[in-house]
Picture 1 (spheres, helix red, strand yellow):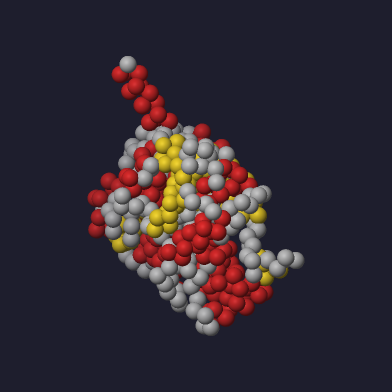
Picture 2 (cartoon, helix red, strand yellow):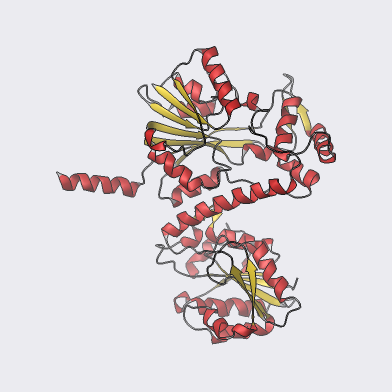
Length: 481
């Protein structure tokens, strides 16, 4: 691959967004931060980020060094002025670079693989410029230019960038077919749409990775072998997360627990409300839930088997809806939340970890499968998604702890399910070997892994309607009096 600098154009005012769009957050990081990460992930070096004067305060939080930031003193002259500054800096880099990749700072879904594909296309070809042609359509960004093509920047005027020049020079531009799309953020609605797309992308890549390396099938009921670890005493005390949830409960409430599992929260909440509707797609989980209902004498839980959103979701109404460690692997999470909010009158609640419960098995992936695990979205991405959707979530962190299992056997079953190894295979033997090397056993016989950091658990609460929607309702009522 040719040695290339990265030039990120990030000096625009973002007037259609209302200002500050490059530092709005999706998927756990600012919009511009995703572009910077993609450029670094593709190996672009040096990196040149062109910012407006009022954007420099954000450089350090983005991990940008002083030499990586160029200030455009007149960003009002348009994108062309930033392009000229950025390519001039790339051309002056020492040691010299062979090429530069120009990226737009408001395209947070740009992928390192796309950048590398463009540079690979330039390597050994006659063209001086390479652009992507996305399977799902959209603009031809980023743009990779060999050093002789840097001169094109001098011919660019206004706010159109290289596009018009490349259209004229089409015969000298290499188009590279790539998957997906690379949309930009222009409005608040775009931010919400891209936040949902980013969530879906991570879920999809996580699933595709499993399908690529798996040795063992999921089976009809993924949780059948591990449902026991989701059981808990409904009359327990000292559970900070449960206490945080109970603070939202009223005796007359109906609660909706989506992905209720074996009733870890549905059963104790039912002690203090009128009814809990518990929905879960796993027969083994619901069997454990019903068994606990009988054991502990909790009749006011209505257990329904199904995957959310249900076909007849409109028939379900609740005062409070809850997802607890659910949603991490839901690709169409925006639709999931839409249905959850429609079924809720007062408060939506989510219990999520800063990293998914399955992240406990991530250290096993490089030595077992030869590649790092693609992480699923979790608490930071949820909060960013809700804000992008116009909600005002509150976040409480009631617990930070190391995850423990009742026995070594229980932990082994869990890790095997999260690495998809076949019992007795070479990969499975390696997994067991690592498990024993990393195993820590407490005095009470419970176990944990030495290589796993403590996880924080958040309780997120939000109104199912945005402040703007509430204001609209008030205006409607006022106008009708």
